[in-house]
Amino acid sequence: MGAIPADVDAEQGPPTAVPLAHFLAALGFLLAGAVVLVAGPAGRTGYLAAVHLLLAGWVCVTIMGAMTQFVPVWSGVGLHSRRLAVWQLWLAAPGFAGIAAAFLTGRLALAPVAGGVAAVGVWTFAYNLGRTLAAVEDAGVTERHFAVALACFVAVALLGPVLAADLTGGVLPVAGVGHVGALRAHATLAVFGAVLATVAGALYQLATMFTQTELGPVERRFRDAETVAYPVGVGLLALGRLLSAAALARVGGVLVAASIAGVGLVVVNRLRTTRVEWNPMLVRYGVVAAFAVAWAASALIGWWVEPLGALYGHPAAGPWLLAGLVGFVVAGTLYHVVPFLVWVREYSDLLGLEDVPLIDDLYDGRIARVELALLVVGGALLVASGSSGLAVPVPWASRAGGALLAAGVALFAANLALIVVRHGGLVKGDLLGVRG
Image 1: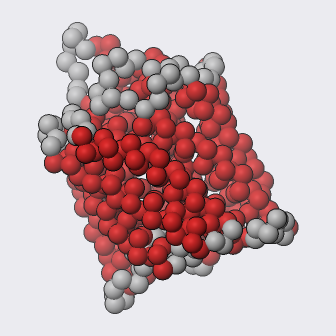
Image 2: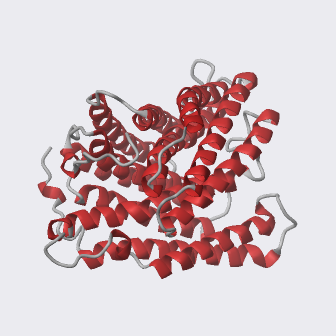
């Protein structure tokens, strides 16, 4: 994948209604997850419900839609099956929602069933994209990261129903692997394998494409090393946690943190040399770079001390910084991908025949700036509330931070949804008519 390929063929991907349906479903999960996070039940069940709504529902469904659209487009190969691209959403989305509902209602017997449905949807996605990637003759850095991510999606979907069944049936331990080890491996493969491997691979492409620049010699050497080091690190970190081998997990953690720090610095350098005017999307990638470097520094400390129990890096800072890293990558990408898909569908054929809007004109830039401020300030207040362990508790900060965060999420979702409503990108899409 080059910076801006000249031979991009949008016809290689599925009908735009397919990825747009994924993105709209993901926005629904984002809103539900924000509500549960801010106003849901306290304790472990509320936390697990929020995690599955936000990580599986919002982030992973977004990734599924984005990869289904852009792997064929950027890699220059046809999507293996358009029909499977539809079924993956119809299976995964209800499955993820069912898992969250099981935790929220306390009906844990439903979790293995919902988890099984979600797993079939995820495996359908992995099979479809795996067959698509297999047709790529000269795989680049992005394709290789995506292949690692797909393998992790498969493993995560395998462990998920097993963990859900163990909550009620006691199916673990098996071969010396207990619930805690399997849970740690499941979380590791989900966050650092399925999600961050996709993010890292995409950032090489997006950071050059959206800034209209190319990687320098030092960046290319780092990229080649990171392409090997990162998947090895994820594998060692997950295996070490599965087997409760702290030394193995520590080595993997160092490789993962160093790789993410380097990717963040690559993004910083691309933004520094950008040839385009700054917009809400690039601002978010600037935030992403800052979060990546800060998270990596905290993770190196946290994992050196406790590589098994500190799932997401330093216990105090890791989860917050990681949430910012992943959240702003997804948000920044959606601010380009959704308008791009709608523009291609509705206006590309009219170019040169009549006045058509620019891609960035399809969303409201003022709303984007306001919701960005709300998300940053709301997140900062939540950290200040003391729930992260970073600051002296401030009683009112938690309520105010949650309210601002919820408002920012609502504006973000509304801004993107209005693109589709106003410009008809999905209304005309006939998912039932997709043939694969």
